[in-house]
Amino acid sequence: MKILYAWLSLILLFSAGCATGGRPEGHLLFDGSNALRQVEKQVAFGPRVPGSDSHTACEVYLLETLAASADTVTTDRWSHVTASGDTLLLVNIQASFNPGARERVLLCAHWDTRPIAEHDPDPGKRGTPIPGANDGGSGVAVLLEMSRVFSLSRPEVGVDIVLFDGEDYGDFYADQDVLLGSRRFAIEQRSYRPVLGILLDMVGDRNASFPYEGHSWASLPQHCKLVWDTAESLGYREIFQRQVGPAVTDDHIPLLKAGIRCIDIVQMGLPYWHTQGDTPDKCSPAALEAVGRTLAVVVYGRAWGR
Image (cartoon, rainbow, N blue to C red; front, top):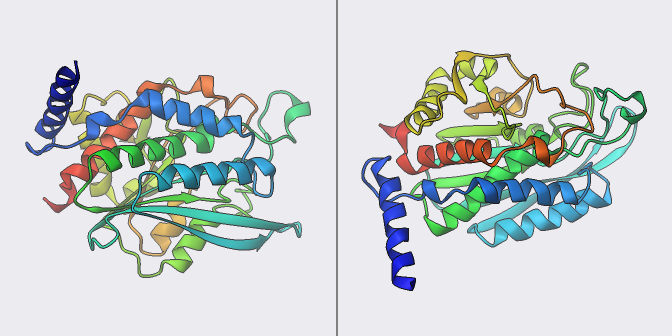
């Protein structure tokens, strides 16, 4: 039986290589069911609002999980005074593979959750923090599963997985107390220039649909095409749609302004966005797997260099 499992593993890796130029690669090791479990684990801590016990407990879990796979794991801690005068203690988490490689890819998501559910249909719940299964949890879950895959089938390129804190805290319309982790990263990493950056936000919905995000398409159309072409080659054309969608204020914006090339994979228009309905049952292992396997082929295939 062990011999059979060994042969199945070899076939799995060989099949992955056929999709990326004949070289054994591990994108088929990405398991959407594992990613969904990572969504559930995050939500089980409770809302990950900066300053809460749930936020602290989840941070510990993220650090331990990434440390089991990555070559290095580092944190960047800082405090932020909000418009209302509160002080937030925030932390960005970075896990790196092949830290000495000059050619690098950035994969990122935000790991905090919103402190208010202002769009909840029940007015009594609008002042309570959201569970954040899809909004926050799904992008992080994909990247945690990616780190496991990279530990089993190492990419040649350097990869930096960065989890931003404080993305969803404040007022997006007033541009106050939002995108805090990515703004911090853009300032602290002024010389960081990955060949490609990909942000994940709300990527787990059961009816996943990702058009080109507007700012990403305007700034980096070739990088968008690279990712969407890869998705199509894997059979995910219905999910990665060939049309330009809304321009979204998200963590890629501070990065783009700082000269860090980063596109956004994001789904807007979800009925449970910023409500108490953002729970794990809204997420699908198939959607998470489509995103994860697409990113893995991009990384392993190094298509940007062709």
